[in-house]
Image 1: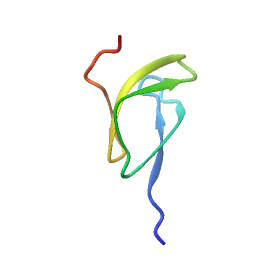
Image 2: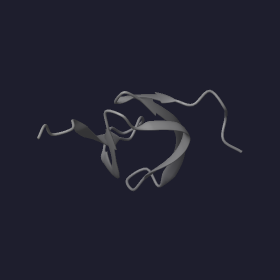
Image 3: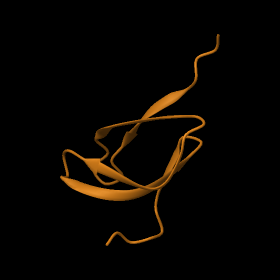
Image 4: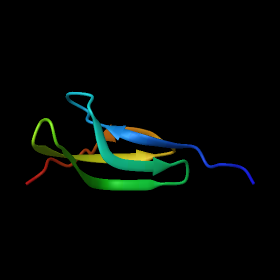
Length: 59
């Protein structure tokens, strides 16, 4: 049985590891990622283990 590749998501600002883990087939759109260190929430998109800021500004 092959293991699926997974990665922990890091904060896009301070680069600290967050408590969110994603797999190769995980797709997140406008996901509210919270950083314990920054104490802030960022909207992100994740596709095929690649993370980018979501285009929509958070309200």
